[in-house]
Image 1 (tube, rainbow, N blue to C red):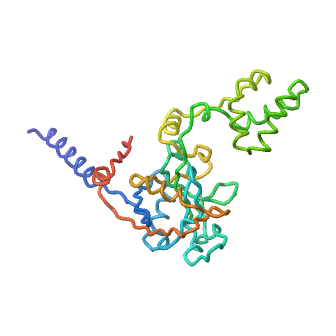
Image 2 (image 1 turned 120 degrees about the vertical axis):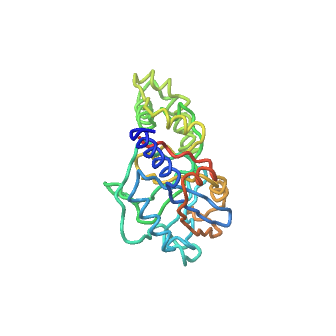
Image 3 (image 1 turned 60 degrees about the horizontal axis):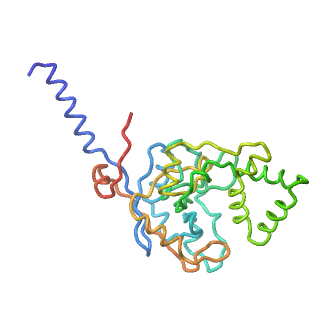
Length: 284
């Protein structure tokens, strides 16, 4: 073997060896309903570093999933929940700092997404500790490609027309007797009619990969680009469903406390992939 081929072979050997030993952190969230296993994204380094730091310190241990909404998400990470009394209002606690938002077009609120909660703030900074895990639901293509704000505005304009009194009465009756959700569903049914009468288009675009994910796996698309997604549950999705199904009070707090214990372990990426079937994206 000549020197050139030797150098190439050595370089390939070093590369293969590096890939084989490349590691990542596996997050395990333990609950009485089972364990959830998650990875954290390199694309959100501030959130990843912060979550790992808090988990290693035991910050999350014994905290509650204090806000649970079926078909939406389960939320925890408020330190005030560790010794919370029954009926106590929760959700405002934290470590005393926020984390700058880290948005990435490839990270969105598919079922199992691990995302940072936040209060309203113009920079969309995340809570230093509170997070939620998406359950969501599956959506139709029509639902995902309809701008509901535009549709609602067009519907209100339509109801102000003198020749649409019967439509106005019907929609108002649905809203008053069946509620906002039923009203929204009816607007979806009437979308083509509203667009035709009002000469408007209420279509919105959605990236193909998001469209595919939300119509098959499901999730919460209305949260996209508003809250930082920094990880993903890759094992134990059924645990999310079990927790989300628990009865809650009027503040969405589970009537029976659901505590978490969080561990982080550094493992070879190949082992994580083998254990949970997660495929790491190829680096460009």
